Amino acid sequence: MRLHRNLCFATVDGLLQIFNEGMYADKVVQQLLKRDKRWGSRDRAFVAETTYDIVRWKRLYAEIAEVKEPFSRDDVWRLVAVWATLKGIKLPDWKYFENTPSRKIKGRFDEFSSVRKIKESVPDWMDKLVSKELGEKLWGKEIAALNEQADVVLRVNTLKTTKEKLQAELFDLDIETDEIKNYPNALKLKERANVFTTDAFQKGYFEVQDASSQKVAEFLDVQPGMRVVDTCAGAGGKTLHLAALMENKGQIIAMDIYENKLKELKRRAKRAGAHNIEMRVIDSTKPIKKLYDKADRVLIDAPCSGLGVLRRNPDAKWKLQPEFIEKIKKTQSEILNTYSRMVKPGGKLVYATCSILPSENQKQVEAFLASENGKNFNFIKEKKILANESGFDGFYMALLEKKN
Image: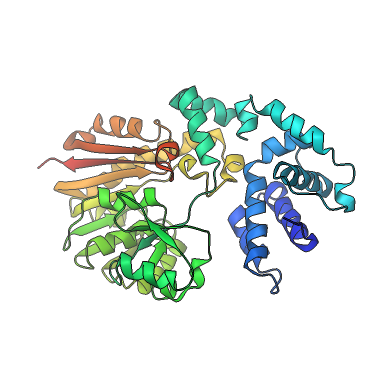
């Protein structure tokens, strides 16, 4: 591979925004990709993947390059030099790469390979916290899996097409996909491609949704004709899956505290042909109280640390703080306690997170079941998904049933 100056410049600019200005990697990459209309798909892939790669391995590369934050522009060029050297890419004779000690870089890489928090590039507090909750051995396996690039997985929209038809349509566009065993509506791309520009996407034949995330709606055991509440719907990936599972029959009430996210869901629902969804903004306790004892099914896809989805959000490693995790646990507990009241007797509830921490998952469910309100529920089953076992995102889900 040869390095191209304008692509490296774009990458360096993006990294400075992410590291020094606290901008989100996905937003920065989106902007960078619009920078030069002449770039082909390969150029854009280079910028996106290199930026994410250096964000993912920030700590390791900074230790090797012997640079500290806040990074200067020269420091970031040194990170690029480390990245390229470790990838086996020959450095061009640009002034930014003068005196790059290639042998020393490889030596320092070997030196750090026995120190997990540097080798796997995580902050000290995170390494300490998660190894305490999961155990040293399991955390070691899990963080290695979470540092791999995530696959692109599609969820076939069964309201509009079948898996076979979609697979054939994408194949005609030279986009090859594989089915995934035990994931009925999932297709995995063999190679990364921009699927959002395809006709099939515009027509609402699929959504991009990780395989683990696709398990959540299935876990809720919905049937056509039910009244279902998705309490933390966001932009609605799981809401749309519920609509498909319910064959557009019945009612889904999609709720969120952020109105702009529900507007995005409305747009996506229109494209998907999902017309049994009603949006409600949670701007007070009123919308929730109105639904007490009214829902057949309630999904609580709770806000969480997001530690299970570090593969697609590597910058979360550097943005997340231990105080946030403590705060979010209190929120999870309050949400579970309040939103569970919407379930009618005999109805079911799923509590789910994209975290791998037991304190955000089974511990929250145990505490709820021991509470005054939780005594009205029976625990049915739970599912813990780890990236190192599944190859997909880390997730947790618990199914509870309200006593009659």
